[in-house]
Image (cartoon, rainbow, N blue to C red; front, side, top):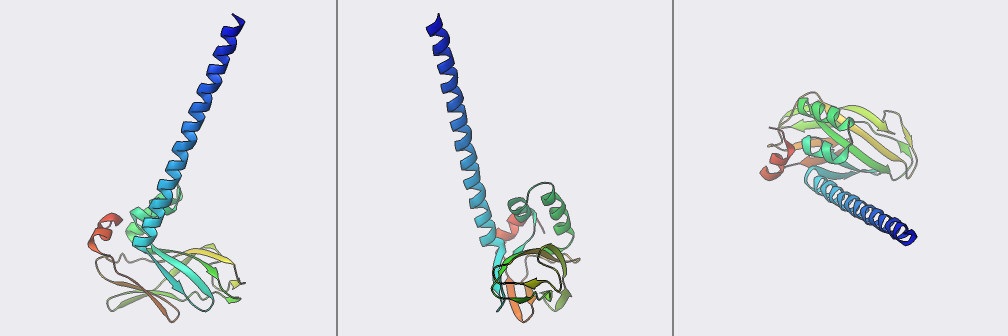
Length: 175
């Protein structure tokens, strides 16, 4: 009888170990799927940009990108805002010391708009950066631009062009 109880306890431990192993494997697979989804989103909707002081990635915010890049409840708020206006997530690193240039403009066709900035980290006017400092923020305009036409984002004298093929536009969940 003692051996029966002991073997039951061993079987429970083995069962729990198997369940834990399966859960870890599922979490790792989910993490890999998430990494692959983020990588694809960056390929489809992101563009690199750099100046003499900052290297960054700009990502158009829409239904697909907010889901891939942000966690709830923030992603729901950003998704709603991105449906009403045009927004880009900006993430980068300072390559040298200096003040952050906050002159972002967004243009489609002949219409150009001065972007407003949302500071997440080191992304405000007058921010002093040192080499290696991380920046994160959002640039936005109140007008919803179509993804079916070229969008240019100007950062000082630099221009980043967003042209999306129809299959990418369809993923965005916007018109």
